[in-house]
Amino acid sequence: MVYDGILYGSITRLEPGHGFGFIKDDGGMDWFFVREDVRGERFENIWIGERVGFVIEKTKSGPRAADVHHEQVD
Image 1 (cartoon, rainbow, N blue to C red):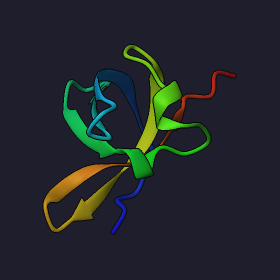
Image 2 (spheres, rainbow, N blue to C red; image 1 turned 90 degrees about the vertical axis):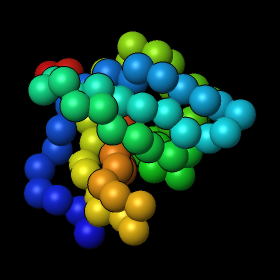
Image 3 (cartoon, one colour; image 1 turned 120 degrees about the horizontal axis):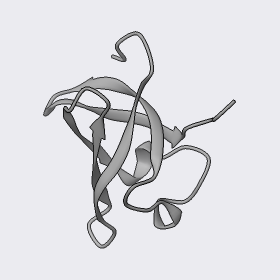
């Protein structure tokens, strides 16, 4: 299940060897994400500090960031 709306934040931690990372949204909440949730680029090409957009997905382990993508600047 995906909650409505796109959130924005910055990558704060990456664990490439384990295939996961964390995002801090603009409201200060931390969100876990996994390699398979990165859209449009390879997990190995994202970096700490990168601005991203994402949605929140409910999983059996709890909510996490999904559809993680580079934030588009107009």
